[in-house]
Each structure stands twice: as C-alpha cells, then as structure tokens.
Image (cartoon, rainbow, N blue to C red; front, side, top):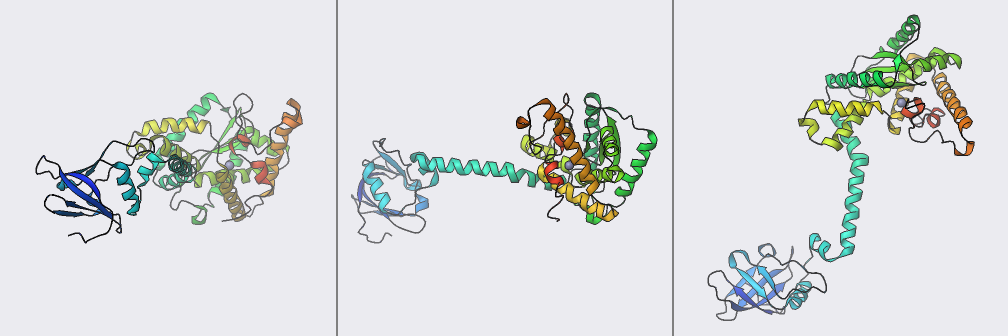
Length: 381
Ligand SMILES: [Zn+2]
C-alpha cells in the first residue's frame, strides 16, 4: 500500500481494464532506487495502486515544441492511465528523479545523438583496427594446412599466368640456394614457432620476370625472383644476404601473416560464413588478395625480428641482408629520380606502389623496408 506522501498529484483518467468507464484518479510519482514508483488514488472509492518503476510502461518523451495533446501510461494488468496535461506530467516526472533512458535522450537531444554516433564510429573503427587483426590471429590457429595449400596453389597459378615467368637461374645455383634454405628451415624449433605446433613444409621457388623480390604464401611456399639473386651477386652482398631475406620470409610463413590477412578479409567480408560457409569462395577471394599482396608494417617488424633470431641461431650476420635491401632501394630511387624531379619522388616509406607494368618489387610487398633496414628489430620480443 502506498505510503502517505506530500508529492504533488496530478489528475488523470484511469481505465482499469475491468470496465470501459474512465475513473478519475490522482497520480503521484515518488523517487525510488531504480526509478520512481507510480501511485494513484481513485477519487470515487479511494482505491489505491502502487506500482514499481518496472511495472509501468512509461510514455516516450517528446521533442520540445511538439507536445502531444495527451499521454497514455501503460499500467500492465492494471489497465492504463490517460494524462490530459503532458507538461505537468513531464514536470512531475523530472521532479521524481527519473533518469531518462539513452534511447529516449537520443530521440530528443541532437547532442546526445551525435555523441552516441561518435562513440559507435570509434567502436567500429577500433574493431577494424584492432578487433579484426586480433580475431584473425586467433582464427588462424584453426585454419587447416590443407586450406593454406589450396589457397597457395590457386594463387601461384594466378601469379604464374599473369605476373612471372619460369626462373632462368642455373639449376646448380638453385640447388645451392635450396641447400642453404633447407639448413635455415632445419633451425625452426619451438622458439621459432609463434604458432605452437604449426610446422608447414617449407618450400623455395624461383621465378623471373619480376623486379628483385621475395614473398611468402600461406602454408610454407616462398618465392624468390631471379632479380633478387642477381642483385645479391652484383651488390657483393652474396649468399648470406639472400639467406637473411629467406629467414625474413620464413618469419612471414611461421607468423602466418598471409593467412591472417586472408582471415581478416574473411572476418570483414563473410563474418561467420568463414566458419560455416563455402570454402571455395573463401579460397577464391583469398587468392585474389594474395596476388595484390602487401604485408602490414607490424607483420614486417615481426618478420624482421624472426629473421634476426633465426640468423643468430644460424651464426650468420644480418647486415648483408639489410645492405642488399638498401641497395635495391637505392636503385629504385635512382630510377625514379631519372623519371621525375627529386622533389616529387615518393619517399621509400610510402604505401605499396606497383611498378614496371603491374609487377611488384620488394618495396611494394614489404612496406617501410628502407626505414626498418637501418635498425632491424629494435625491440626484440
Ligand atoms: Zn616482409
């Protein structure tokens, strides 16, 4: 039963659900934890009703300047109230300490709406920026090696048809490099496995028809171009430089960077469909992503640190590798300076850019190399 109260009361009509006749009542609102209580007293027979905040269907607020002619308050099993003086109701409600729900404030206050939109946008942006890479890293743990191999097989077919030609390196030279590569691959142990238990077979392929480059595809296939091998020879940085580059690529494989990027796209494009949907469509868009491959900056740092750790384990220096990469960058800069004025030449830290009729060189697939090469892996994990 309601406690006697000095709260102001408001005249209203009560349809109690038992008769169609409106009963004259006095309504009052009383501050309470969790929202005001509504009390009413019938003027005909003194009957009272005391309802908790949650038992009342509170009418929506209205925008200033659009006061409705009357309000209906839903009392659930007790029927409804009709309020003929909405402004008096609103004043009584304001005096009862009711907090306006966010959805209502958004309807009536532009500032609140804008603030909510801003928070939502930041949330979505943060999801894209951190949420999807994080989710991709987790999901990548569950991507079967067979999927990675299917993806890579398809991507290699596309790359072979559109971007590269068979290698012209002498078979003996290829064999030499594969031997060095196999020695590096044999060093992969638990401390060089960021994904515990993930041990894809590592395979080295050579191709020509592209500028100096090397890249790693999901599931262990690494491609190095003839131009990269030739550049190591002409720059005098030699075999150790190429092994450093291969260690960096093995880093991309072991960190599953391309798989993570494909999964990120999967998270964004097909959401849960990745887990439940058609594998072939994922492989299809995945392979088209790989042919425009560009690692992220954070991936480059991980691969650099991996290369540093692997070369240390092999007892080899990383300086020849950075010298090789910087010498490639110098060639690119010199070439661009020849084409343009120095002032308009893009800086080496700019985002990937295709060169030479769509062919991708090291700097388009491995962004920021020139900046990183001067201080490889500044903060070892
Ligand atoms: Zn890289």
